[in-house]
Each structure stands twice: as structure tokens, then as C-alpha cells.
Image (cartoon, rainbow, N blue to C red; front, top):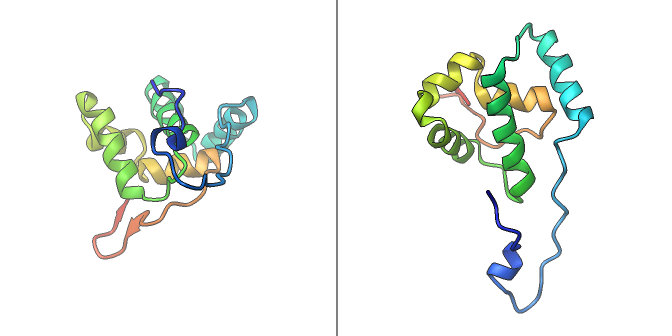
Length: 122
């Protein structure tokens, strides 16, 4: 899905930037944590739930600037458009897909995760 070329190879700079290595999230510990927290939330994880969680984990393993909730929510909408897009994601995760998945996998909080003016929670 993603090429092995790094961003520094695609866009060379005069001085290379030091980047923090991207995390490896797909570990047995992460999946165990997801299962445990899903039980806490009384959320039964089905195959569609796991597919969406895998997408978010893949995103984080290949993105080094993953802070904007709106951008990730739009990307998820496009990825799952044939299943129903945002409506499908909110049926799976009623408290908000990103909010729930970030809690389940213990991912860092995103900027613009909630919009207080409209009450939207991604």
C-alpha cells in the first residue's frame, strides 16, 4: 500500500531533518489493550470494527504528522465510502470513531477532536 521511499528521499533538503522513528503499533500488546478496553466500554468488536481499527493503526504507522482529527476523519470517510462513509463509522462507534479508537489503542489525542460549537465528536 505504501512505498518504501521515505519522505526525505522524495523531497530532499539541503540539511536532513532528524525524525522520530514511527511507532510499531500492530503488536500483541496493542491488540490485547484494545480487547480489554472494548470490554470496559461494553463494545463487541466485530470484523468491521477490526477493519476500521486496522486502518487507523496503519495510518499511524505511516504518518509522521498525524495531529489533525478532521483530516483523518475525512480520510476514513473516503476509505469506507462504499460501506456508508461517516454514517457507517458512527454506527460502528457511536461515541465517535476516532475518539473511541484512540481510547481503545491508547493513541495520542488529536487536535480538533471535538467541535464545541456544533457538538461534533470525531
